[in-house]
Image (cartoon, rainbow, N blue to C red):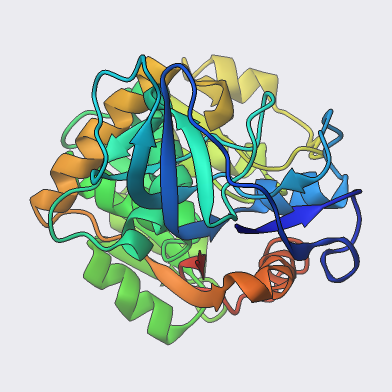
Length: 333
């Protein structure tokens, strides 16, 4: 089978190659999956480059997300059978190989059924970002109907999921975007207020929307560099400040304004969530897709042979702020 692998960490164009590897065999509660589509995430590029130092077994297959068809199952599998369509995430960590391959084995607790009428590309595009958005809004943020949510990057991978999930839960949503086209798209996704940060005064637009006596209940921070003082000023009493990006960020933090408003700051990485917690996310995500309330956003699509180019495009947007993406990068097998 073909797979995108590295034999050492480094730049994508130098170390990420497509090679022939033996097909894996399912053991225990593992599924053998013929991968149809996988998504690129920033974490994939951090591991491949060595920016995040992990114990890797080479050749190392990159990729966290997958969508495909079950080809065979291990003797202990209970919930799936050959022919089932499945999606999932959380691979390439803790000794698990990645997903940029024609065939992979995945323990069944990390796999979820793909809803009828959803494509493999769509399921892969919504995997990590969908679970991340759900965890932040509901497990950590405890979002309630009628509350107001703010998220930066309302047409990005995580941001677009936050917009759609918050609306599905009955919340009001404010999001920022970087162009007139993205503003229209964000509004189509359900944002009550989409603000073009390149041409509008973001803070003034937020204040006008929430009113003199209002504020934000959940600030879902997706930026690598944060401004806690500004954020805390916008949060309502007992508001929640959700952080899940910016590994090297060390901003000044205004303790006084934070505690006198009874605020909570919650940081999380989706990879730390248990299989049961992630399965609960997946159940709601699938229900919302079936109900027409969730549409994963796809930005660019590459064949497996161009996996290095897909990684370069992700880095161009994540690390260099190019802003050329709206949605996820998909790699097809």
